[in-house]
Length: 66
Image (cartoon, rainbow, N blue to C red; front, side, top):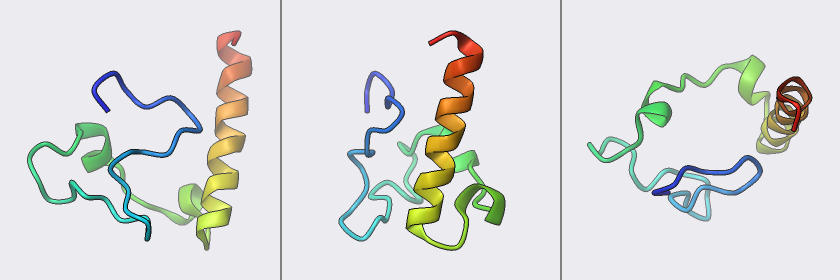
């Protein structure tokens, strides 16, 4: 996404089965390549991962005054 990805917006590079179309390619964003999935950030399911991300977004929005 040329201008960044807003929180809560699905990445345009995700396939219907939630796989990255850019995985292993040089144009994959650095932030994605550096992300290491872990139970505390991804949970045990896609639903749990989305809930965790939403919680982090709310917490950081309060801290930044958004």
